[in-house]
Image (tube, rainbow, N blue to C red; front, side, top):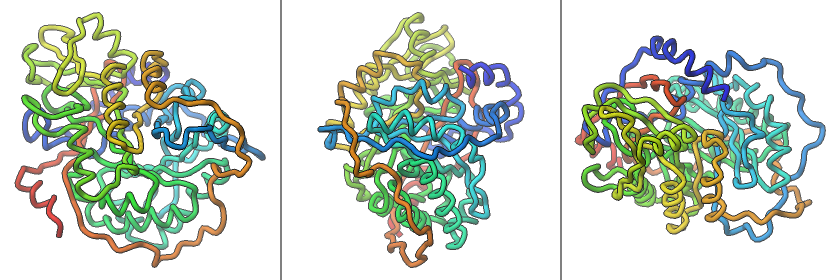
Length: 458
């Protein structure tokens, strides 16, 4: 893999250039967990991929394949897959097992314009050509991980209008189907404006989904209003144990001793508590794990230095060679590479349990960060197919899959009122290559008292 090979060769340079340190607040599932799982992975890999990418934009197609409708698939769960621009070629993605393919990602600038658009234009034609004939929708991922930029744009109706117009142009030019808004580290100052932005965007593109935190530590996401305005909230359900904390499951299905309460189940219940309907919840799952230096093989363990990410295709065979073990509480496999290391990850069995939970709970569906990390593992995709079978399809000439065109003018009065409703924290570190230490993220200092204040309605 390009991104793994280059990343491993240059990992030390990235780490040396990182200015921030992770500071855990408590052991195990830490209150210091980061809000920016996708941002941190981009910090590990994205700059490398940009440096090796061609700057020339691909030509937009004069025609593009219409989205077909899969017969009988109306009630099937959503299967949402992020494709990162540093991943293997998009042609390697088994799109027939997905319902949505999200191309990560075009960046937001402080004036509302979009940058790094070649990450979209260089692959969008191919993605649509692969996805639409099998009934899979393609989304442009719009990313922003800088709170100053978010404030600059979201607090300005004119700058929001610029963003909406440019995003709609990129989507419609390539016959794609919508936008995924991936804003991480969102400040509370833009909570209402984020809702307005989603409404404005939804008015001119076919679909809008959002990447949202497993625990909204800042209380910046008004879940029920965002759910109402969008087509779905993709919970980034990973990083419950992070590089700067102690070893443990990346995506625990359930909480309980000795791990504490934070888990995928906890996150789903938190979203429900704050008014998110089940049919707007997409449970995001990780195709990566993490390995920590530790004092011993005791579980729970104690880290001796930061852990590093291990992608699925590396973690699964490595754990088998070390001696795979299983945590019954969280439904997570783990292994001990040595007497002073712990590897926690997800494999086909654990992911099947977590996908099955999403289906059994009646959620809209589940998804993955990120496709191509699995290395085309047949056992994993068989589990996906068993829970979300696809039946093939016939062409639907109604063109319901292409993004809505039309006037991109924004009505500044369109945003609905929003009831304040903060909740918890998002926590994830994200992944890199099998041996690359994850770059350190921003420091989040919040205690349990602060959590209780943030979670109260104002």
